[in-house]
Amino acid sequence: MDWALAIQNLISPPVLFFALGLVAALARSDLSIPEAIAKALSLYLMLAIGFKGGVAASENGLTVDLLLVIGAAGLLSASIPILAFWLLRTTTRVSQIDAAAIAAHYGSISIVTFIAGTAALDAAGIAFPGIMVAAAAAMEAPAIAIALFLAHRGQAGTPQTPKAPWREVALNGSIVLLIGAFIIGMVTGQKGYSDIEPFIADPFKGVLCLFLLDMGLVAGRELRQVRKTLTPALLAFGLYMPPIAGVIGGVTGALIGLPDGGIALLAILSGSASYIAVPAAMRLALPQAKPALYLTLSLAITFPFNLTIGIPFYIALAGWLS
Amino acid sequence: MTQTYPKKRLSIIIEAPFLNRLLDLLDGLDVPGYTALPALAGRGKSRSWRRDALSSDAGRMVQVLIVLDQGKVPAVLQEIRKVLDQQIGIVTLSDVEVLRPELF
Figure 1 (cartoon, rainbow over the protein chains, first blue to last red):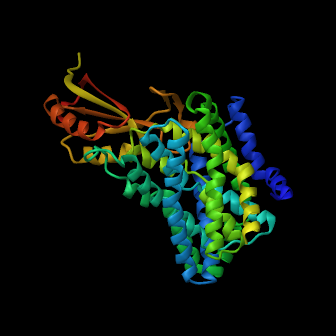
Figure 2: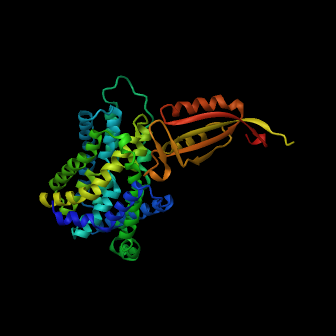
Figure 3: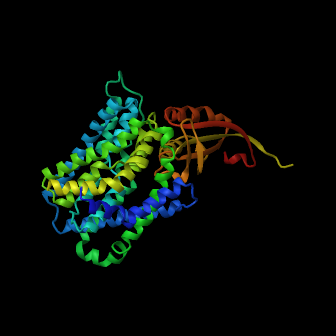
């Protein structure tokens, strides 16, 4: 690993603000970000990252590359849960349903980790293709579909399951805004970017810091539950699964010919785990699965791991692979 | 003394991700109205939770209140049971008095 890059990431303002939130929550400070403000910050970040991705993609047009990236991302999102499910069933004692629900989280992505990854790449001066935003959007539904299949695989008869949450997943607010902003960015191009640049470019890092402070608070509160909810084997899974999936994503990115930044972002997406969209989808589709397990794992273990150690590792990995 | 009238109050505490499905169901049933309220914190079988400590709707709970006539209760409960059977939540039915019975 490039240690200079790792240290630069660890002492970057976004990561330090995340650490501040984490420590404050663990110390039971009453520091909190109002829910509506946290929601507005996340909407801003989705809009900015989607729009900037669209503008970057507009310079190349809708090429085969875009379809290739979306196809590869979809394939990763469908295959990573199978590996995660197998590892969980082999190394832990979680039930089939719980293993499938956790696997869905690891096949899907954390858009906040993705955004933090783009900020780390910017800081390191590594360019990345705008179409990676489309990859992020394509990595939600396949993981959920595979997880539902895994949850009921081998069960006799037709299981009594609630209606699959396809409408909720497809129209998930984050995805709608991300894709919508991407399309607007593609349509308006560089001219549109110049028009709103002071809004979406300059405040971006500051907003990311505030948002990650909130995520640190949320992750810290979740971390307090770890001892009650996670066994050592599950905790270990939350730490070894991200680099395994990240390497698979990175190799896939190299195989389809992505540049350094693209490989790193596909590794970051593959190594990240959802803690916003998929938990809600799992409550609808697999209500028997224990939310304490998948929420604590993805939010309190994998997210901080990726933010601090994972992102520099994936960036270094991209350097080795390209 | 002001005259009041007996009605039933149905309280459904349900996970927030399920709220829209429940409301869609209630919109198709013969209920005079409902009110949905967010819960701030709680404790269930597995652990306690605080609204500000959750990253998404998963884990949050909401309460839906319905005041209705006794005669409508069995049919509404039957439909609600069909969709809530596997969800985390609590359904309670209690007696209440209302001032304006024509609303229910």
